[in-house]
Length: 143
Length: 146
Image (cartoon, rainbow over the protein chains, first blue to last red):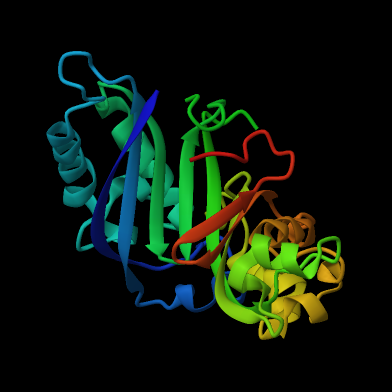
């Protein structure tokens, strides 16, 4: 089993606000991320696919194809967008790093036909990131 | 929790500390042979990076595995206050009779963070320099992921 990872970057704005909570609770839970006019990040996305290299091509998957999937499913949806208002898949959810990573997993998983999606890691900043795995995947090397 | 997906949260922290690698069970000469310049009697320091991985359910009300403010203050209290700008050998009791290698540092930091109430601690990774890093997952079966 070999893991192959591709990294892309996109920039987007968001804010954290739960309409079911009071203004005060929102401020307490989300702090400055609750600023009503939002703020933005340069997100870094790492997508890891697991599989056996094809004996003919030596590849787990065609990286060009993965690049196109990421362009179509992630860049066009999220790059230079406001995640609260412009990404229907996130409607009704707080656009935290966890939730964005999960939505990206759900968008990519059906598209990855060669190998199997193993991990989606989304960095909001170098110091904060969320990982999404298929539940029940084993430890390293046993996806 | 029967979600088809499994989420982890990763957060990085920094502290600076000095240490000296020296074992009381070895002779002066053996210490120098084993630890090299890290055995310099007056010690030396590093800018450490601690990467903490937590797993848990994402709360639908907040979109979060754990509240970051609470995680940050927990790590501050449990680790950074005791380690930042300190001598690990002299200021941290765990290292009075244990060599403060980054391996042992990982284990000690894991021990101090294990009780975080909001999520499960999966693993601690410590970078001593940009060129080396160490990970410890306790006995978590899910801990040793790529």
